[in-house]
Image (cartoon, rainbow, N blue to C red):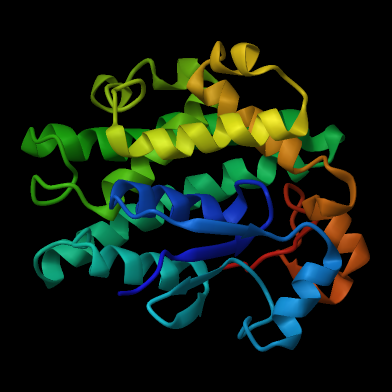
Length: 267
């Protein structure tokens, strides 16, 4: 019998978080081996575990999978979260790519230079309320069903709910005009509980809040805390690894809103 999937990444959200969500939604228990120092990343690189010398990497079914989309596609297919035919799969891919577009903007926001943060936040708010959320609201309104595709839970729904929590933590007011999407935030989702416990445990281990203080925070604020803490832990942070292991820092396109690098893959 195959063992639990093992996830190799930094102790933060980043590009592994959508993989955690998908596994949790599929009811799959998994283990995590956090990369805590540059030597941990060197070891994975030197033993041939990282095909393109970057993370995330997931050990599953005897494979060492890299590249986020490839990992998500495999998990979604294996656990029947990828539609019943080619047409449904095409829709799921289309919606998932739209989620990823906005998610990338939000994920890169903490790395934005202070002088550019206001302009970046304004752009994210505009794209959220005028482009992405209206599109998903209209899909749900058009067929009157609870799920985006085929009236059945798919990876597109899971990615969208994850995105909605990120939008909520950014600015809860952005969801005000989207009643169908707003239902997805705060709705009790049993498969989300392991991720919530992970947020609590991660913050407890960093010692910045007591458990009672942490559990009293809103769900979006918990995620925000994990993201900020995960990016400000000295040599184990994203930027810390960039300085310590520059050859493993995959460059992102240079733009006014994204001048930096992430020690992870980039699509």
